[in-house]
Image (cartoon, rainbow, N blue to C red):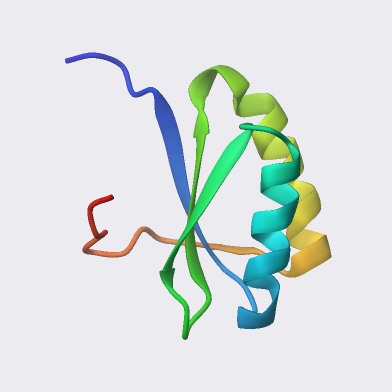
Length: 81
């Protein structure tokens, strides 16, 4: 089985901050990608290349303070892309 290309982590944040989070991630030109899994509860999946792990995790740590990201366990069911 091939190694995973992307690491995926799950976060909850205030609903009003989802757009801000997406804007910030997009400004880093492919460093990480977000998709909203549950907009009512502010649940997002953030995926990033394993080769950019250090940069992505540094950014996520900064965003935790800026937009209130709180890491949560992966949901039991994640919808397919």
